[in-house]
Length: 433
Image (cartoon, rainbow, N blue to C red):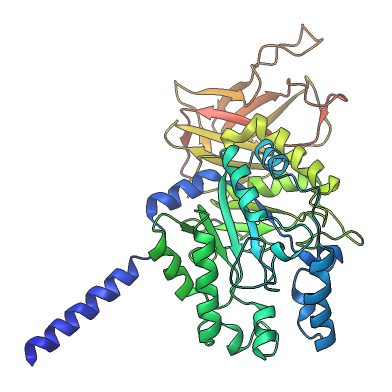
């Protein structure tokens, strides 16, 4: 009898130990931290109304919910959806991955599911959007991420449970039927072989463990790591983390009363997030016909131009030791290349060919130090042959002074509103504590 008890205890401890291993692999998290920039996609059938995604079902009378679930599928026809055009745009924007809302809280599924009729397959469109986008992203070499909400308003309504998020029966841990339903849907989604998954629910641990057991190489973002929403933390956080943020005020398409951030602000947020060690998941909300709104496409292309020039300063980098910012300058570093990047933000009307000086108190030069502006050869200013734009530096007792000329012509007006990045190799950090 005593032997049986010992074996039972041993088996229980081994089981708990195994359960503790159902986490993101460290090497996968390092790869995630290298990516730096991703695109979030919030899209569902209520984009037709321009309403907040899903949440209009909470607090609604039965007639509204029934109309929502019965009528909106009849008119949802994203006939202009071009998965390859989306993927090309995301690639040009400099993203390394995209996270698609396969199912938001309303319960409407954007894939060919056998679990419910409330899906894209029962609309006039009748095609598997998730499959099409997954294939297109892979053709562009982008990692595929799925957003999935276990909190399913349509399921709760059919079950006779009050539609809400912060109630016990809304959670898979308290609702066995909902748990079984979520696992069946995840089995279907895992068949698409995603690289990442984002669980948006208050109770998610059992499902995190479930997908890790099914696919040990899957990266779980929300559910395994910090994912600040619509905000950037005050300072660096340990390990991988990801800020998700809208371009305007709403996640889904909002045709009126919207207020978009401009491209310069989005680039500055990307820089701050990367300097603090996080990834930036920037959201788009497609129109109900399947197009990315021009206001959002324009901002992605502005980010894309900046990333095309400067992506080495935001990909495969880590936060610097000590002070990550001096005034208008953020720092990142690539330790393998012994390189520090100084990302200079907030510089207004920097005309092509003009020079500006900056003092970096945290750095000092060495005999092997080299300094240059990322993206330009430092040899010529177009139409101004007398201007030699070589980046210069002088070591002072109080810091390293860099003299920077913005020589590359990126806009017709010869002005550049977005950050200039300086590459510094073989420099040392100054300990000023």
